[in-house]
Amino acid sequence: MIIKRRFFKSPLIFPPGIIIEMKVVWRFLFTFLRMRKNIFFSICLCLLFVSISSGQINNDLRAYLEAMPPANRNPDELMEENRKFWYHHRFFLAQGRADGSLARQWREEESRATTKLADDDPSIPTPKVNNAPSVPSLTAPIDGLQCTENPLVFSWNKSSDPDGDAVSYSIQLATINSFSKDLQVRSISDNTTTLSLIKGVAYYWRVNAKDTKNKSSEFSPVRKFYSEGEGVSNHIPYAATLIRPALNSNITDSSATLEWSSSDIDNDSLLYDVYAGVVNPPPLVLENSDSTSYTINLSAGTTYYWKIVVKDDVGGEAIGQIWSFKSN
Image (cartoon, rainbow, N blue to C red; front, side, top):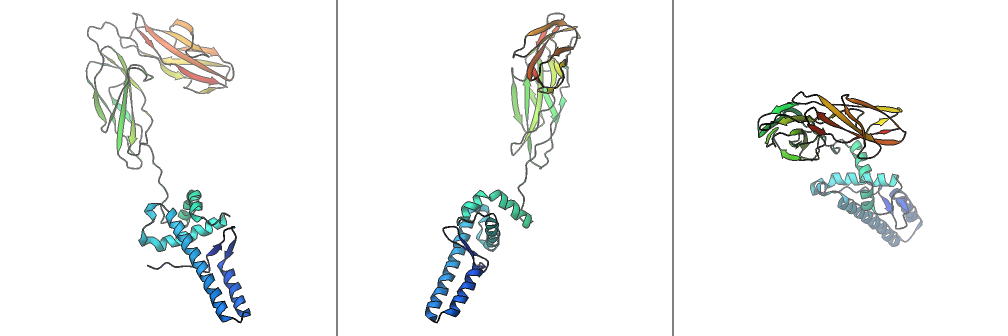
């Protein structure tokens, strides 16, 4: 295997960092030879410069190859690597970083040099960015179902992955819509699974997708259902669902209208206790209201917390999660 050495294009790099182009060295050498009468001394001097230039090329090429990732150190590609070596050699010189240690410069400038080389040589692939799968779409059980089956089958539409990666799913099931109590989590490769339920309990569930490179999608919108109990004469209402303001949003007005929704599987009349304030947990500000909105005055630069407790007319009660927003 032959490596092409470009003597007239390779610079000499001395320890103090002085760079001398080879064409300048050879011009000086030929002038010197014409001035000297001692042929033997001139030949020795010529061999010395050839040895220096050859050694410099071999050392820099070796350092470059050692700095390359293992996948690029195939001996059969050494000619191509030699071409890349000269490209990077000139790139580093142009950046004013020729201090004699090309291997260290390669590690420091790897990202910039690879990008520049890829632009120059289309055969070098650009690193691929991994994309998350699409968000699963829930199919069963339907939202607000009064469920008589136990265990219950959960299903959703399959997600697609932009990169063609295999996709798995994570389903979360809990008894409050913040998914912080009685949480069940199951990771599966199919788009259906069966879970056991506690009788007479309101449930909330959601699903997200993940590819083989651990890139996850956002969770699906939350659905709720109620597991039928034996001899139950009343079901507790569902916890309140946030309408506005959006969670963790910024509000520029001097007041804010808090708005929510809820439902009851028995169609009982509902009343609401409103908790709101600048501390967490927030204090009670309104009790037994039949309205699904409440307006509060705001102070600039303050974070507000609020929650809703939903009550039916036969004693059922659902305590909602704490939401927050900030006034600007």
